[in-house]
Length: 69
Length: 69
DNA sequence: ATCTATTATTCCCGTTCGGGAATAATTACT
DNA sequence: AGTAATTATTCCCGAACGGGAATAATAGAT
Image 1 (cartoon, chains in turn green, cyan, red, purple):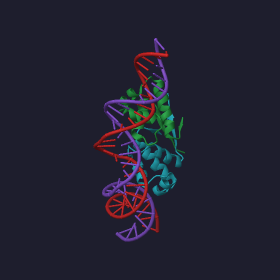
Image 2: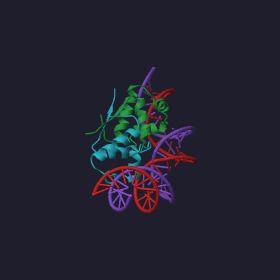
Image 3: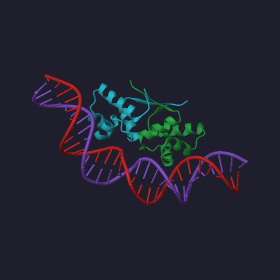
Image 4: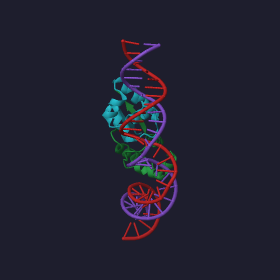
């Protein structure tokens, strides 16, 4: 899936988390972020800090990839 | 290229920008971010805001992709 | 429909982002 | 080497992040 916005990331985080039967609280603890942050992230908040986003993705086994020309 | 940290993103931004003969000032203006932000980003600052990062990548033609299981 | 679990939203608040501009430092060019 | 250009770093400061906790709202299950 191609990411074009923060919303896209939120969507995939939410989807994947549910697929793996995680609750926000669980994933937040696992990722060392607050539950507020995770909620914000899943709802597409555009100002989330990149490092925490990456950590959450990692804890869901989601691979983030970049495609240069 | 697989992204594991903010540093990885910074690296590819810098590389790609140079390949395309952009200066930080140019890319910053193009992306509607400050030059400070761009410098920080390229140097791997972990707290950069996700939306601006995405915008910069887009302006370099770098595709951001997510790989779910 | 009811009750519970999960998620979203609000609050307080310390910390930090990021813009802009100036300055230092680094790099590139001849 | 010397000069110009590019980048990094510092400063000021308003605005917003994110944690924690409480509350409201939503969804899920029986």
